[in-house]
Amino acid sequence: MRISSPISGKLLRAPDCGRADKQRPCVGVISDRRTEDGVGYETVRVRYLEALRTTAGVLPLVIPGGLVEGDLRVCLSVLNGVLLTGAESNVSPSFYGGPEACPKTLDLDRDRTSFAAIEIALSSGIPLFGICRGLQELNVALGGSLSSNISEGEGRITHVEDLSRPRDLQYAPFHAILAEGHGHIAQCIRRSQKNPVLVNTLHRQGIARLADGLAVDARCVDGVIEAISVKDTATFAAAVQWHPEWFHVEDSLSVEIFRAFGEACRSHMIETK
Image 1: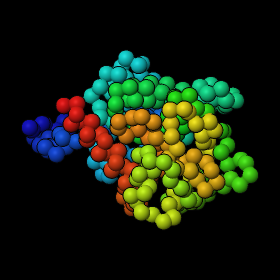
Image 2: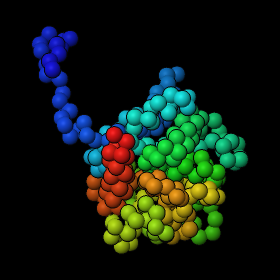
Image 3: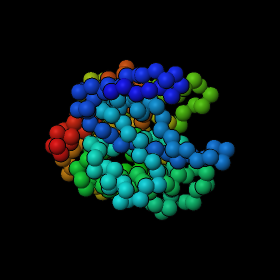
Image 4: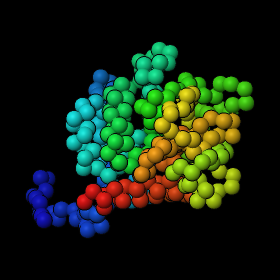
C-alpha cells in the first residue's frame, strides 16, 4: 500500500507489519493519569513497552485510566494479556481502610481502571502481570491491605531508591529474595539459576495483609513479600514488587518472567481464536 506524504507529496510505502507481527498476542498496559502545567496526560514508561515487545514477544497497547467498566470489557475482549505497571502514585488507602493520604500522591482513575481490569482478567482467564504498584493493586483488589512504609520495623532493610544516584544504579540489584511455593514467579526464580537471587527495590509501600486469594511466591530476606500468584488459576496471574523491566535483556530472572508471561499470552491467543 502506498500513501502520499503531506509534506513532500511523494508516494511512500506504508510500514509492513509482516506475518509474524500479525501472529503476536496483544497486551493491554494500564497507563497513569498525570497533570502538568494544567494539562492532563496518560503516561506509560517506555521501558515497560520495550520489555513486552522484545523479551515477552507481545504487542503492547496502552489502556487509558478512567474507562468505565463496559468499555474496559470491550477493550479486554480483544486482548491476550494485561500488564499493571509501576507508578509514582500510590493506591488510595480508601480502598483498603488505610490512613488518609495526600491527594497529590494518588491516581484514582488508575485505581479504578486497574481494579476493574483485574476483575475482568481473572474472571475471563486473561493472563495478568503486575509490577510494583501492580502487585499492590492486585493485593488490594482481592481484599488485602498495604503498609505505607514497608521499611519500618526491626530488621527491615531500606526499600526505597536513592534519588541522588544515576537511574541505572537506582534500579541495580539491591537485596536477596527467597522463592516460596510453586507459583508462576517462584518457578521463574528457580529456572533463572541465580545464586543468590538479587532484585532491585524502589517501593516505600508494600503488602501488609495478604489477600486470601493470593499465595506468596517470594520474600525479601527481611520478610517483606516480593512476589505473589493468584491461587487456583489456569493461566499466568502474578505480580512482583521489584522492577524486572529495567534490565529485561541482561537479567536472567527478568527474562524468565517476561517470557513466561509472553507464553501465557500466546496460549490465550491460540485458545481464543
